[in-house]
Image 1 (cartoon, rainbow over the protein chains, first blue to last red):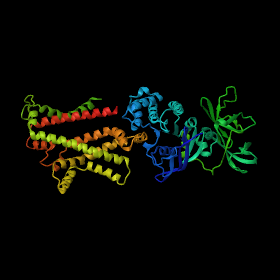
Image 2: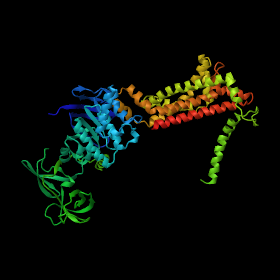
Image 3: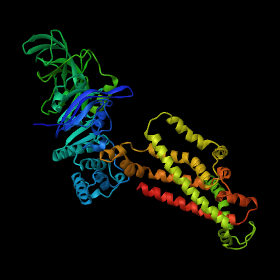
Image 4: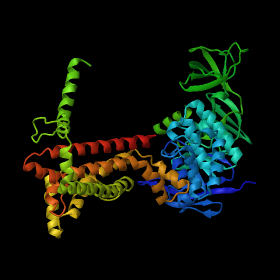
Length: 378
Length: 255
């Protein structure tokens, strides 16, 4: 049985007349790892700062363990934050940085020493207690920031893009380490990121945000495999959008016309009518690239080939000019696997691997969102 | 470096330091006149310290500089913090007015301050000097502290609050230690400015409180005595020590 730890209800916030959060409601369970994911300017950091108490909502309430903390000052909230650029106190040693929160609680000296050493051991920095922050590497500073925040044993740890300043390899290591810490401490983690890969691999649940509104709330698997709308589908991972049209509805099955192919699919959860246009979503790894003499699929030709180590990514141009992204795992026994640029192929997928979305009044992504989604992929 | 740039550099340093070296050498000259060498002696230092008016002026100047620098650092730091942290009406005007005080000719400041003190019926002496010195030191302190605050990580106070510090505790344990080098630099700047001010001090000082620059000025008017060389050397050594101390503090705070 999960218990609600923090709940936000009807939160609105404006900065200089521009709405950053709009009537947002969210409940966070005790002990979960929840990620706020979205492009820059989507309100995810503002939301986190509101939990910490650095921003006050214009409307709405913040409740922690059934107590209203909307107006509570940051120093009186039993939550701690790991800041984006660590915000370590430059004039204090690592030990004093970590001890700061306990000194504020006026704990006895012996207890402070013991708990600081314990926290530093947890992040494998026991030997660095006497150093100043500028004598540490980025990854070590990051770990000090985490130790400083968890030493007070908060009910909840708020992490504001804590890994964005680290290089790729270190980021992967820290992701694993953070997950381990969260398991060991059993503290609720609220993690802010614009990196969808990070969000998918670390979270119990993901909140996809755009323009101060929740686009989708679900497990990584739900968000990736069953996106609630076009924005989520585009922002989280890469997706092929095939135009489809409903040609037959019969019980729980429908027929959809895609590039002139008739595919029998199961009925989506939303209402469908005859001749309704649909998006048929397929992830690149769901696409099958077949030989040109195959009877299945749509004809096209390879226009791009990218060797990615474990996979081979290609872009295939169909006869109507649209591009399809495909990502295949190596199969050395398959002689037809390695196509060269310009070669003719056919494109297909296994029935049931697609995901259907209703058209959303033809709203293409704005340039900014397109850029943000690109950023998130790299 | 070619010989041309080398000799140019040498010339620049020669012009800068020859007068100072001459002054220091002649402060140990036994001769009464300033242009011939009469052997090594400390007599001018002796006569300097026997000159009670001079010693009194020296102490007065030191005390004035200390208090003026301290008061202007206190006010200046608070002003800089207010200008940095808060958004309020008239902030830009207030900011600009600091530069006006800094840029305006000293003589204008001197006349206006004198006028003000006379209008208020304030007796010219230590208090009027202090008020005047704080006035012209203030913008320098504010600008020094603001420069440091501009590079200050806004997340630091938030991190302190997040860890349970009240606004006051945060200021005491995080904000002030981090901007300490700027406070020191501002204080030293104020101290130096106050120490060697002549123009403003001439207008606002009274017979009850004589300060060193004015004393020297009046001494030189009746003829150059070698005592002045001794005094100059002492002042030079004093500022060198101050400079070294400030550098030491700065390098220590960086570690």
